[in-house]
Image (cartoon, helix red, strand yellow):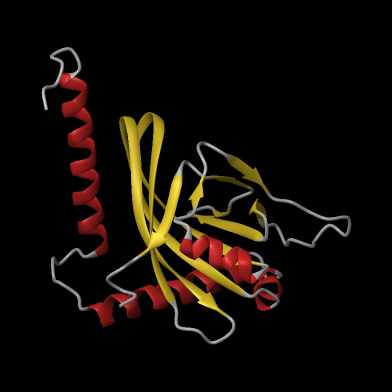
Length: 200
C-alpha cells in the first residue's frame, strides 16, 4: 500500500502512538515480563473484580443493594495513555451472572481524541437489570458510543439508581477514578468484547 508523502509523517506518528500504548500496557499489567497461564489470568481478573466492588461499596454503599437486585454485573479495569493528539487504552474484565453460570471474561478497547499527555487508570462497573441487557452486552461486541458523557440518573425518590448512570436500556454504570466515584462518565468510543482465550 502506497502512502501519500503528505500524510506519511502523520501515519508514522499514529503508528508510534499505538506501539507505545501497547508497550506501556504490557509493562503495567505484567512488569516482570513473565507469561501467565490462562488460569492465572482468570484468577487475577476475579481478584481485581472483587477489589473493584469493595472500593465501589466504600464510596457508594447503596450500590451493593443495587447489584444484589440485578441479574448480573461486570467490572473492567482500564489502563489508558494519551500522547499529543490521540490516545487510547485497553483493559480486561469479567461478567458475573447471578444464575451461577461461569464467569465470562472480556476485553475492552478505547480510542480517544484530544490534546494532552498523560497516563490514567479507571474502573468501570456495569449493572444489568435484565437478562436481555446482559446477553446483549456479552454477545454483541457492545460499544459505548463516541464521546458520549452520561450523568448519574435519579428517579423521583432520589436514590433509585444509587448514583449510577444509565448507559443503555437495562444497563447502569459506575466509573471509579483515582479521585473516587465519577459524577459524569465519558464513553470515549469504548468497545467491549469476549476474550476468546480465557473463555475456552
